[in-house]
Structure formats: C-alpha cells, structure tokens
Length: 119
Image 1 (tube, rainbow, N blue to C red):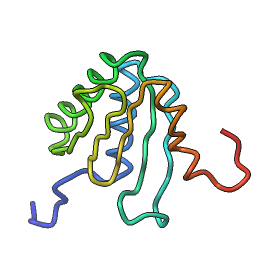
Image 2: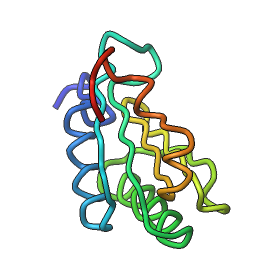
Image 3: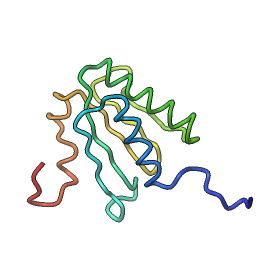
C-alpha cells in the first residue's frame, strides 16, 4: 500500500454514508444539493428535518459518531445543544438538520435551487 491513499472517503461515498445514517435515524424530507463547481466550501449539502429538538440533536450525534467510527471523519458540529438547527461539517459534505418550523423559516435549500425550480 502506498502513502497516496486518501485519508477520507471521496465526497460521493461520504454523501452515501451520510444519507444512509440519516435514513436509519428517521430523518424526514431529506434533500441533497450538488454544489460541485458552485461552491468552494463543500461538494454536497444535505438538508433534512427531525420532528423534535430531541430527535434533531440525536440525529446529529449519531451522524457525528458514525462518521468518526466508521469513516474516520472528524466532523465539526454546531447547534446540537439547542436542537433547532444543527450544522454538521464533514468536509466535502455539510449537513443541516432542522426542526420543521425552523427549516421553513430559513428555507436554506431554496437558495441553491436553480431559478424557477419548484421545491
């Protein structure tokens, strides 16, 4: 084995792992947004909802643990204590987990949709 192997999974593999973990955690209304070539911050953005502050915080914690244990990704997390909106920065994939009311208020994914697209 050479020293050329990537330390982290490619963005598409990371995205798949995140989507699977969110599905297992019963995330609702999961939207994935391809930002390759549109943003230097990340390749993918995932936006989803949890039914309560407790579920939002739990989903974020499970995702953070799974990324670390199974994929060697040390994600940075913000907002887990409040449980209204949690941001998980996994490098090439950034995940936003919202309570439905907070998600509706900010409408984050609409900023990245092409003009004229319906949500």
